[in-house]
Image 1 (cartoon, one colour):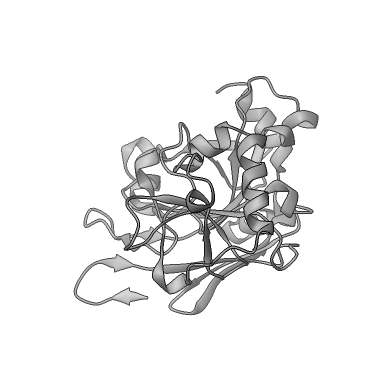
Image 2: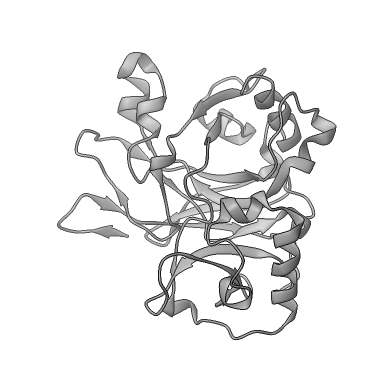
Amino acid sequence: MLVSGGRRLLTVLQAQRWPFQQSRDMRLVQFQAPHLMGPHLGLESQAGGGVINLNAFDPTLPKTMIEFLEQGEATLSVARRALAAQLPVLPRSEVTFLAPVTRPDKVVCVGMNYVDHCKEQNVPVPKEPIIFSKFASSIVGPYDEVVLPPESQEVDWEVELAVVIGKKGKHIKATDAMAHVAGFTVAHDVSARDWQMKRNGKQWLLGKTFDTFCPLGPALVTKDGVADPHNLKICCRVNGEVVQSSNTNQMVFKTEELIAWVSHSR
C-alpha cells in the first residue's frame, strides 16, 4: 500500500506452491512480542500461522538466526522436537516478524537470472552469472515499510528467491553445494533505477542498497522442506495487485551453479 503524507512503499511478497506438508515443516523465524525482551527465535506453526517460541522451549538456544544456524544439527534437532511437541502458539497478530536473517556477512545477488525477465527487458540471456551485492544494512523485516529515498524518482520492485547459506565454504563444487544451504526465504530486491543505471558510473551497488531496500521473510524454510527449489511460483503484489509472477524454473543459473560460481571468488 502507498501511505499518503510520506514517501513510503509497502509491498506484499508471496512465494506459492512450496511443496510443504501443512504443519510439519521447519519454518524458522525471528520475531518480537510486547511481553518478551528483545528478538527471539521461533517456528511458524504453518504458513501464515502463529509462532512457537523456541527460546521458551529451550532457553539455551541462541536468540539470533545466524548463531542458531552456526550450531548446525544440534539446534535444528531442538527445533524439530519443539515442532513435534504441540506447544502453545503465539497468535500472529501479537508478534512482529523480523527478517529471518539479520546482519549476514554477505548479501550476494544475481542479476538477470530469469529467462522471462530477460525477454521482458529485451536483453540477451547471460552467458555467466551477473553478480552484485547489497549492504546488510538494507535488510528489513517482511512487513516493514520500504522508505522511498528523496534522492530517487525511479524506485522499482523485484521479488526473489533467497538462498540462506548455513555452512561456510570456498571452491565449492556444484555437486556439493546444497550441503552448504540452510534453507530458503523470500526476498525483495528493491532498486533505485536512476541510481543503478544513470549514476555512480552505472555501477549497480548504490542503486540497490539504500536503507530498507532488502525486505526478507517472514520464514526461513529449511531445505528439507523444499522438494525442488527450481519449481516454485513466486510473485510480488503491490496494493493487492500482482505486479510480478514467475516461477523459479525460469532461473538461468540454478542454485548449485551459483554457489559454486560465487565460492570461487568470494
